Length: 319
Image (cartoon, rainbow, N blue to C red):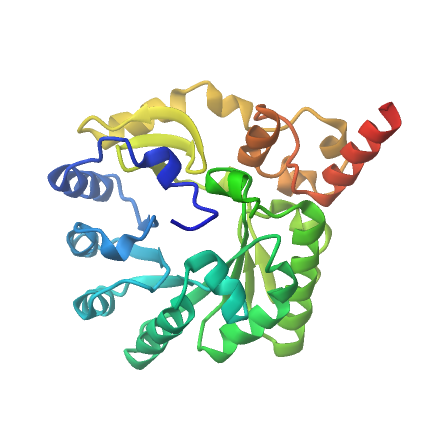
């Protein structure tokens, strides 16, 4: 029920894969030499198949990671996580109780911090991630420091996107505010010598100079996003289906790779990006955000400050 959730509004009515179908999918992934499986939510730790999926993946020597709020879980799950070396990323949506509970609900701060303390006591490696929104963006620096103090390996930031519940609640972050968050996080990373990871921020290379701040671009990744129904999505934030799992993962992946939609996200067709010094890495930024904003996968990332201010000036001058 988080006010920025993009999962429940879209996936709640789908026919979810059965337990046996999920285990079969994991086994087929192992046969394809998949090295890593990432589990996200909703909330993975309350899902009845979580333990079975982790065990199956571990038995096939696949690494497993999970993103969790740390609010609802049972002690036995922590034992499973430790036994199978699951890497945990904990959602910590602010450096203050007010900001975190605005997103996660009343009393969530105490539960999340308590969960993190249990991870530390059990020597389970973890990172934290903040979903940067219009209300907590100024806390990015303090968040990085808090992440370090809590024993995290890395402080991650992800922008709250304009999709799902974030549209109606207005929780999504704008380009100027997200850039401010990046700058504050970078400043604190340099001050503390602590690693920061910027998720879904391929344009960050235009602004980040710190050796402690890393960022990537999913356009270069060798992975697939699979939703609860077994559909392979272009991105888990938008409902563009490339293929469907029908009991043969290899065939589904091959079908997804043949889908002509993939060609649409290879590069953008906009002078703002094509003339940018960061284009070879960024390639137009997040195509999912472009689709959310413009309904077009080949438009520039609206969260990029260069795009944001260029487009705004264009429309102002046109008026």
